[in-house]
Amino acid sequence: MDTIATITTTLQEKIGATIVEIADRSDLHKHHQGRMNAPVGSGHYDAIVVATSFSGKTMMQQHRMVYEALADQMQTTIHALALKTYTPEQWTQKSSQK
Image (cartoon, rainbow, N blue to C red; front, side, top):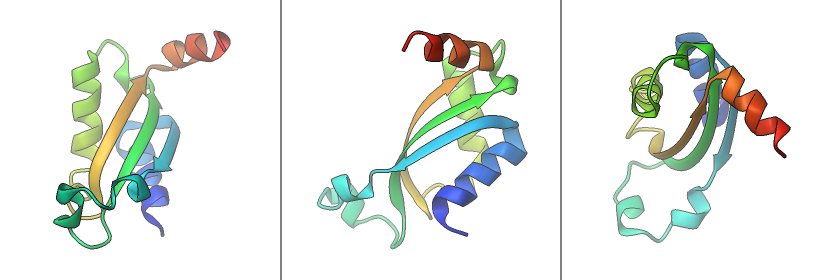
């Protein structure tokens, strides 16, 4: 299973994410010093995560939930992760504004 599929499955199973959109941005960071010292095969990712379990939580708490769910992958297959997290209601509202 590739890294994006693994991240998606992990978030679905551990926090009940209903929407997970991930973009691999590793190529944009390949010459950064931190990236050159990162474990081989690790990458930079942008992620949008929508989960009912985020309801009533602050953005910081939501991000902690994601990082805890992905703890085994952080600093191994994931070097950096930029997050945008939403409850289903927030996601619906955001989508209707487009």
